Length: 80
Image (cartoon, rainbow, N blue to C red; front, side, top):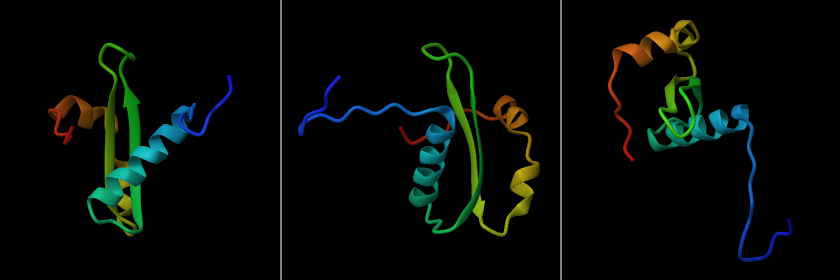
């Protein structure tokens, strides 16, 4: 499939998707350098969702968080 000047086609794997979303969320919330942890859960087209924690670079506790527990405990709060 060829690409033109007016159309670009992208294909990302899970790691790329999570990195892009983490960087976006960090930027939107004022973090220049940051620590993050992300997880995609669910089934595409049904209940796919992202759990993301973004904090200060020095916030090493982020790596210890159980994202599946967070998923069970909180409601959706995204801006879109």
